[in-house]
Structures are given as structure tokens and as C-alpha cells.
Length: 254
Length: 184
Image 1: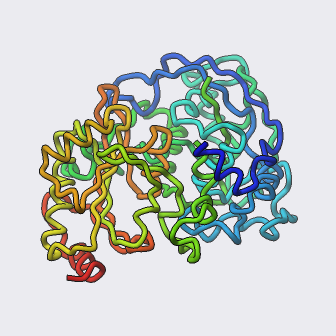
Image 2: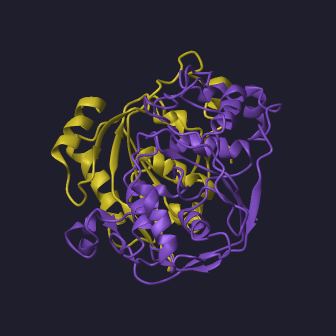
């Protein structure tokens, strides 16, 4: 009841999922993350989940904004998105030439991404879910120990960030998921759980009061620069931030 | 829970403030329900009208959290114990911090419940509330949490007026902001 009443008031009952997006099942299990679960060595433990096979596109986010006008760039409260939210669109309700329908949507805040995922009865993936999924290639669930995989993932980061974003359409990985690496940065649900110190050698140092408990966590697998860059970028964000290279996809718990 | 989809629910649902929309930079735009140490549930936005000092904590934390609570207490004292000032601490740990745990903590720390509220959210809402407050936290495998320690001062409309990460003693600038806002 608590949920339905505001739904009724907003007239949203007719506005269900905007498009039927594809979600692929991922088996989960034990995963050696670059962020040890205990800040030291413990692996992440992942339950089975479903992940959206593609990042959310401009066309999909446009449909969402039309059915949920509170998320238009001219109406969204500033407490949920910064001033550049959807600024690549020609108008609050028009994509225009600088936002092609099949490009991943960017310039979206964490709050907007989370709201979109809720409209697909989903949520943002956790960092562990995202990192686990992104470790796959076309034939292996975990290709990270292959120098060629690392090289390929890393190469994208060297591309100038002011180039136009490619459209979605990378090769599908072993799970049927595409474009985790090599297209955009992606929000995760727990972006504000990274807590890495700028210099991880300081993890047991003077800043104890800033991070209660075990202090800032350390990053492992120093050879996996590309993933570590993701962590560093995500941990620097505020939930209202938007950037030209930051999009998202959604996940569902099984 | 569809908190974010329903972010405007409060404005439309007809509260005492229905006539005046919330400012666009008000934290009360987030339609997150809180349950307090007496088991009462109410949206965060029902705190509208009274300035608040807000932070996050969890009751089984032995290191910094008691200092967060003590710092909030000391800040109110240093600001001249204004009558119109709420103190709100929300748990990172809704799984363990049920209403009983919050009530025991309030009693154990001799909190003056005329001003204090200890609260929990639904587990799926805790991350969004922390994101709103700019607080970082991470659950560890042993059930403890890493977290940043931040005190926020909100005006009656739920806008952030001041922020401090000084814990263990009062922050003079933050105290001055409280004094100026809550007046005493």
C-alpha cells in the first residue's frame, strides 16, 4: 500500500518498463576482486544474478524520461543530478544530433541511473558483480590472467575522451553480455563503498578517523591497471556527478 | 523499493507543507522512510521545519561511532543547546540495528530523546541515503563496517548548510553555523 499510493498519485501505474531489455544470467561464485572483501585478501562471494546485456542507450533513457518527467533535465531536483545532467541532448525531451539513439546514455547521475533501473524492476550492479562480469571474454568467464585481455582493456583507456562515443555493439562475451569494457565507464550501486585512500600505502596510517574500522582498503592485482582505474574513478564520484563518459547498465538479483 | 522513481511523491501526497514545494537542493526530496527507536516510521522529510544535525553510525561499532554520537551531543552543547535543533543518526546496519538495538543504544548513551532520533532504513534504501549525505561505507565480511564520518547541518528546508568531518572534538566553524541557524 505504501508503495502503490504514491504510484497512483503520480499516475505511473501505466508506465511500466519502457522497453523489454535483455538480461543474461551469471552464475556467481567466489571471485578474486581487485578490492579484497576484508580489505586484505578475502575473495568476493557473489550470488547468482542477471545483468543487462547492454548499457542503457540514449533512446531507452529518452523513453524513461518521457514516462517519468520528474527526471527531465529541466525538472530534476539539483540534489539528484548536477547541472550537466543530459546536457548532450538537444532539448529536455529531444536527443538531437549529439545524442544518437544507439549510443550509451551518459551525463547521468547515480540517482538517475538507479531510478532508471527501478523502472526496469532492477537495480544498479554492485562493484563485485560488475567486475566479475567484466572479467569475461568471448570464451572464458575469467580472462584476466591473459596479457592479451589486459592489453585490450587497457587500450581503450588510452583513447582520447573527447571522441564521439561509439554505438553499442561490441562482441558478446561468454555470458552473452557486451560492451563492459571499451565503451563507457559505468555506475555501480556501491560506488560510495570503495573507500580507497589516494595512496593505498596509507591504509593503516594517520587517516583512521576518516574511515572507521579497518581504514581504507587496499587494491590488489597491481598488474590489472584498467580495473584499478575504474575503482579510482568510481571512488572519486559524488552521487550527483555526471560526465560525458559515464553511463550505466542494470542488474537483477535472482 | 522505488524511492527514486517516486522522488516527488511527498510533494504530491499532501503533507502540511503541500503548499510550498521543497527547494530543488533539499535532501528531503528523497522519499526515504526512516524507522526510529520507538518503532515509528516516517519519511525523512517529516523533519522539515526544524534544523537538524545528521550523521550515520551503527550500534555495534566500538571505535568511531560513539565519538560521532558524542560529537553531535557536544556540538549541540557548544552551540548553546538550541531548542529548535534535531539530532538524527541513521544506521548503516539495518540488518542488525532493529528498533530494540536503537532503543538500547539511546538509553545506554543517555541521549535526550526530546532532540535525538536514532533511525534505521529499509536495507535497500541505506545506500541511497548515504549517497545523499555524501557518506561512504562498506560492509566487511565480519559484519563490521568501514565508513567515513561526517556531520551535516541541514536548515529547516533540508538544505546542507555546513559539513564537518572533525570527530572527537567540536568543529568551531560547524558550531558557529549551528548557532547562527538554530539561534540561541
